[in-house]
Length: 281
Image (cartoon, rainbow, N blue to C red; front, side, top):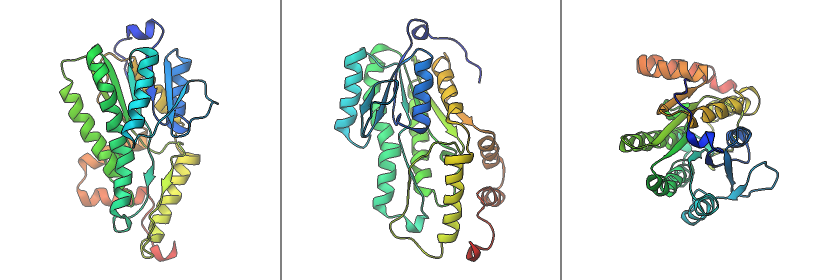
């Protein structure tokens, strides 16, 4: 992507950046890169340890009190927050028929409402200061909902909608919103599974779980790819709303926008290796 300007904050000692879910995966890679480039980074984790190269704060994005305390601590230390990177989350893997309302609510509570809590917590001080940047880590699933990832995709679709609306509402200000839409990356994201599983759906679900485990633990893109893009958008004076990360994601999103539904469905099933004799899986 082309960077259209370098901020004064970067020139004068770096930006204050709050990165959620910074103990591993995309969050840790992002925090490490930003620290190496001179930014003042605060990471978060539900149970922070002291083995990182930046301050780690306790944060449960599902708790109003925890979010308020975390953001308040950064503001107390720094006086302002230049950027929020909303990264914390997990993936629930289950068919719609296997997803209880409780499990669906829990998925959206973390991935969507958790991100929204963080946005609502940092926006007042950003508004008062007249500048700020919110970077929300979405997903390819936020554009095209795969089978067995309905609740996860719903959480990312909701994040996309809220982020787009906020970006429109911030027009005419110096506050920015960016959505990152990566494909499979070596994030080691946590997988949650349905408490009640349907045996007739198990073979296809297990194939998808195997594919996701390989992508997020062995074969996916290096999290450093996303970290570099975060660095670039924070230095961009006019960052785009959406950035698709990964050639596979770019091809699939383009297909989603151009192909008839039936043809795209076949393409998605093939890409996810869900076709074939389910009884033999």
